[in-house]
Length: 438
Ligand SMILES: Nc1ncnc2c1ncn2[C@@H]1O[C@H](COP(=O)(O)OP(=O)(O)OP(=O)(O)O)[C@@H](O)[C@H]1O
Ligand SMILES: [Mg+2]
Image (cartoon, rainbow, N blue to C red; front, side, top):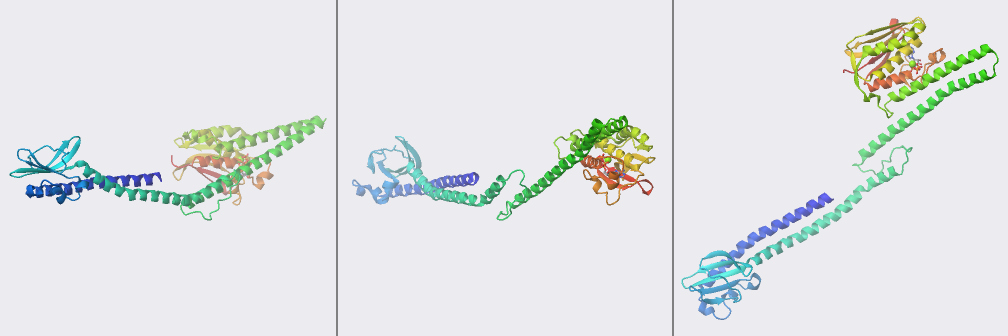
């Protein structure tokens, strides 16, 4: 409104000023002409007949009170023949034509005509012309001011009316608390605001989904933690009551295994929360060039003892020049989870290969085992948090079901794609992580 009204007022002022100067120009021409006509007429008159009573000027220019014409006639030697306003004394000049004279602080436009026997001057204060121009400009400004005021008033009304729906959306939003994420009502929302409201509704939907995911994650985590704690409590009770040393030893072993499971679960939870993008800290803040060979080496060395214990042939194969952009620590967590799975689920005596090479020209990490693999039905589900296949739950291997969720989260952060395939000899599992071009 300020801009529109400002522009209108400025325009009105420009029109007023232009009117003033244009009128001044026109008036100059007209008045100069009338000075000249009056002077010429007077010069031709036989002044003797006109004198001494009120003279030609009154006859010649009837409106002379308004236009303030002063006429003066002198002999060539300067003696006054006649003056329409004796109190006005103009310098006697024989120079014919238009001139401007300053007398007692007033500027006069003067037209002089010289005859053989006398000089006639007709004068008019310059002020008269300015006033006439100002008057006509102010007459122009008046309706313009009214127009600006009218438009201003209409603008206020129109803006109030137009913004009312926005106010409604605003108060609807204000009344919400953090948990009310249902979409905003679209009734009566004007076309201009509709995209904004739709975007807000979409945001609400995503927020609701994120809240729900968060809630179920916490519920699942609590549930997963409860089972090992319950088991620990049971073993502690056994320890307290039992007098049999063999039973005590067994309870101690269970205790230690249970607390190891809990520790693993908590570690996985921490890894997931640091890898998942919906948490505050950004592990990708430190981005570097990571050598895939170094990652493979690190993980294989770390897992070699476990592999030996399970009689698994753990092999590694890595192109030295392969690098990706990302975070080494996170990539090690990713590969470690994959190798851990392969060792656990391949079964005693199996073969596990960890390979870093190019897949269709792109840097990739692959872990191939010859275990039971993952059924086609289970493949999409194993990436869900806390999901474990029925076989895995039934097996002796404990796990939290978070490993592949962590793998997926870290891969997402690196722009990599994780896929599951059948492994070696038409059996087992191959997990393939393909990175984007560096
Ligand atoms: N190499 C594999 N061979 C067969 N099944 C696998 C393999 N890797 C994963 N799975 C299946 O996918 C499920 C999910 O794996 P994930 O790593 O997410 O969880 P987990 O291994 O059970 O627990 P965690 O890794 O958190 O200790 C496993 O429970 C298992 O059923
Ligand atoms: Mg796992």
